[in-house]
Every structure is written in structure tokens, then in C-alpha cells.
Length: 195
Length: 195
Image (tube, rainbow over all chains, first blue to last red; front, side):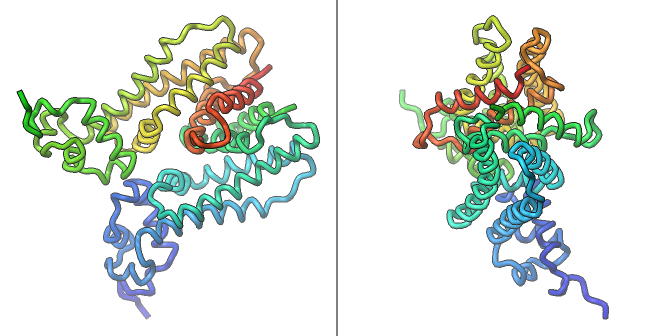
């Protein structure tokens, strides 16, 4: 049976989230209306409220979904034997995961200020959980005498900022392939924390 | 002679720029109107146009001013003897300069997408000029055999992203002073590029 455009069953979660992510990344959360999001999905504004109570929920869902995906993808990695192997795995994983989702990464960083305090707490907690993964690797390496970092928590944030930075300059058509970029960053990360 | 509120002579450049920076940082460029900026300065919207032709010019002035300040402040530093000393100077300078201007740093990164292509070119050129300063230090160190970096251009961007990241987590009331943070980052940067 043919569906009429704008019927409720048309508004699937992924389509709404995709449209919202695209518009938030392009214009910023504050400048985007529910009406615009509905227009992008191809439904009436009223129909959108059947799917999501408001714009804040949509932003929170996007940011939480991004962090959940990240933590799940990291948890699915095999566990390497040595701290050095774990650090290399983290380095390559982080670059690739973030490279594949430039809009979600951009919105997740930029729109933290637009979350309600309660939603901010949740997202911050998930970010901290991810940072803790790297911090644990660094602590293991320090305990084993193969890493020398004065402050594993700060070192974890420094490494993550460095790796996420790839998104701001890397272009597919540029002079370096992503595996080459991974190799350059891994060499720097390896030395930065070395004993 | 007393001035009436909203007279043209009230609208000094610094006051308009401060108000625009605060509002852009808080709400995002696209969500802020000239009327809001005028309200923040305490003048009528019409009066604002005596000072600046439009919102785009205001954004461009803010971002260009930030980069000009950065390049001028860096140029005013004394020139250290060795590449290692120059790298340490850059590390500490970058952290301090950016720490002192969180709103300008945030807007400069976040609102690149809202610049016209011509304005974007100008800002990109200034950013590249700053990155080139660090790249030159790294090349000097490689030539002297004290640094080992596969790609000085990429290494410069990696280091800058790492250092700018301090702004996302550092809090004055936290457990570390800024000089302690500088020391931790300098230790990591030093090792990351070491021969």
C-alpha cells in the first residue's frame, strides 16, 4: 500500500537524526528550527513532534548516540597484550572512528554549551568514560615501566585532542592517505609517552 | 557635555566587538541578530550600522583581529638560541595566549563555516602563517639533528591541536596551576618530536 508523504510511519528515527545532524552542523543548533528539520525530512512540523518532544531531546539523542557508538566500537576491539600495542590500537581507532563522522564530532564538541545541565552531565560522563580507557592504558604502561607520563589523566586528554585534530585538516584528496596519517600520529604519540 | 545614550560617539569599536564576541560564543553566529548586538552595546540597531556594514564584517573583524593579535604577540617574543628552546617557548606561549582568550578561540574555530569564501581565505592564510612558525622550528630541529619528525607540517598541526585542547578542560579552580599544565605539555611535546 502506498504511503502518503508526511504520514507518521515515514518519520523513522534515523532520517530525523540525519536531517538534524546535517542542519546543526551547517547552521548551529540555535539557528535551526523544528520546522526546518521537518522540511528536510519532508514532513509537516507537527508530525515531527510525534517522534521527538523537542529540539533539545534531538540534540541530546545525537550526542548520546555518538558517544554510545564510540564506546561500543571501542569495546568491540580485541584486547592487545602490551600497553604499547593497546596505545597504538587506541591511536588508530580514534583517528578512524572520528574521521568517519566529521559532522557528529563537530556538533558534539560545539554544541555542549546548548545542552541542559542534566543532559550535559550525561554526555560529560560518557566522554569521561572514553577518556578513562586511554588513561587506563597509560597507567598500565607506567606501571610496567614502558611509559613515562607525569599525569595520565592530562596525558589522555592531550593525546585525544591531538588525534581529534586530524578532522580539522585532513582531506581525502590531500597528499597523505589516512593510514599514512595514522602512522605519523602513532609515531608522535608513542614517543610523547615513552619512558 | 553629557552624551545621550545611543549617540554615535558611544559606539566604540572595542565595545561592539566585545558584545558580538560574547553573543557569538554563547549562541553561535547564525542565531545572533544585529539588533541583539546593538541591545548588548546599549544602542539602537540603526546606530550599529554606522560602525559596521553587516554581521559578516563583524565576524571577520573578530577572527582577523584574533589572528593578528596572535601573530603580533608571537613576533614580539625574543628569539631563542636552540630549536629545543624555541619549541619550549612556542608551547608555553600557545597555551598561555589561548588560555587568556577562550571565547575568541572558540568562535575562531567554530565559525569558520560561516565566513564568506573570500573572508575564509584570509583567515586560513593567517592560520597557516602561524602554523608555519612552528613548522619552521621543527624543520630547524630536524636539520640540526635534534628532532625527528616524518612530516613537519603535520607535526605542527598535531602539536597545535594538542595545545589548544587545554582550553576545553582547564579550569582555574582545578588541581593544577597553568604553569604546571605547561610543564606537562612541554614534556610531551619535547618527547613527541625528539630524535
